[in-house]
Image 1 (tube, rainbow, N blue to C red):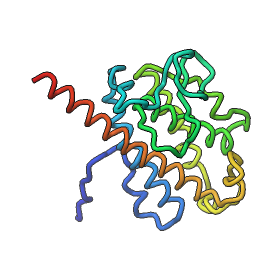
Image 2: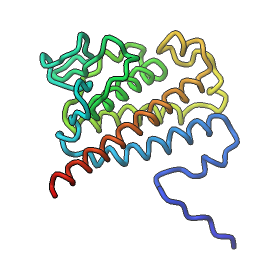
Image 3: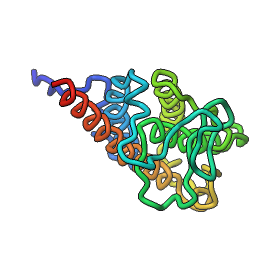
Image 4: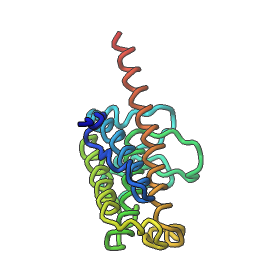
Length: 206
């Protein structure tokens, strides 16, 4: 009898990597990228780490009225600062990156699998580590579940998502890959920030 290979990350469905379909490919990238980010985010239990500013002028999540940008995102007590120029190379806090990923995935889920009502501006931003991570997990899990329920050919369906004009004109697989890129590159930022924050704390302790 041939033994099955033993891999790390038992939470990941390794069998998806053996399915010769476009949907399996985009799902495999989504699932493993999210597993890595989620694992790191669950170690961010300190609000000081969540809100640590890596450089002056970093984009933050703050209580309403404390913002220092011309625009904000969020409908509740906490808001995410929003720059006048979204393409400017602004440093960001972990809190801001988590909020940004949350509003991005919320809007795409809502206008693909939901009621086509909520927009990113309707997010009730969470300002504490536990709730912020739980909120992101909630919407990414909803997005993952929606995609997992699709038929194989749905990845080629034009206009399956109506979140943006580009989404409405594109085969759905392009949107899945776009959200994957968001998780990958913002996840890399979050991991780098946690590394820098923890290294700085360790150095100051000695």
